[in-house]
Image 1 (cartoon, rainbow, N blue to C red):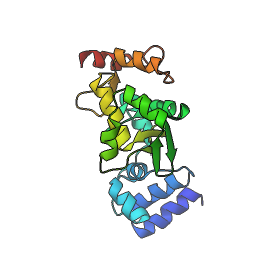
Image 2 (spheres, rainbow, N blue to C red):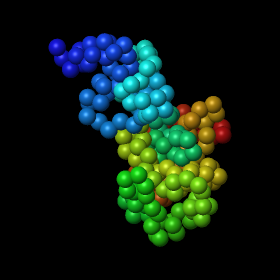
Image 3 (tube, rainbow, N blue to C red):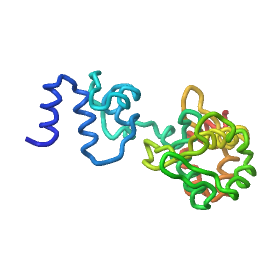
Image 4 (cartoon, rainbow, N blue to C red):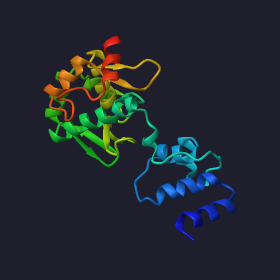
Length: 211
């Protein structure tokens, strides 16, 4: 009997098919967030996080990994709560780390003095961010890119600055973001990897033009 069959049998005896899906995901050896485990099991993130393998909901089988079902627009750029995620969010994080404007640690992070000047130049209100009653700066594992984007108050302030300057635009009725022509020019100026040439997705550019 293979590992998956054995797990299915054990979980079946326990009467919880969702546990089988969580265990199967964990067998890949990849670090998975509660959100990803919840997607795989078909339960809420709160349930997956607080109850772990004792999830009680059943759900139909879904494809794995979850990014296979993500719309291209969402994978390209989207809002994760109030900060930028997707390929754009990861690329921005990489740029900030590469220039040592931001330093990330386990569960936290900090903006360097040079980073403070750099972000201020982009219109990011760091004093306001530091006064917010939340994590100041931290990395958030991007569930489609498998790398970090910037979250916390700094991530929210960065997203706010990009929206205010119309470098990105919200796509109506979606969490997706469109990079505008002005935004692509700015990203190229900042040497953000993958954004220095032609747009990856013409539909996104068209949406941005209508925004």
